Length: 169
Image (cartoon, rainbow, N blue to C red; front, side, top):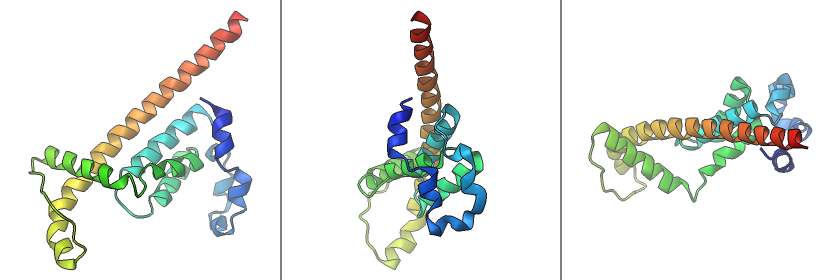
């Protein structure tokens, strides 16, 4: 994997530790594995970040950061990957998740036009929410696991290619 490329764009541990609003975390931010760029930490970061980007909820970055700490993954990368779902990509992603959930649950896909009224939200929340969250969980789990496996494979392939080049020299 291109370590130098990733290091160039990810914040350094010292920059993050200098943020005063994060001082409540104490020594958690001093854990070296949260900042190392190695195969396991980066693969777990992809698993966590891509999982949370498919879940429709506020504060996805906070959930990704806590999961990165819990599973000892690269925290800046986990948080950055959540931004795959941004205001431009959320509507198609979540509509796909809704259609996937409706199909898996055997429900018809409802044609709807969003209205920001309490009446519309209270009547449609269950009809749309259950397939949306079920589809989101399935899609998030599948894409996160696939990204983890692909990243593990690509990283190992790159290391083996580098070993072959060095042994040929």
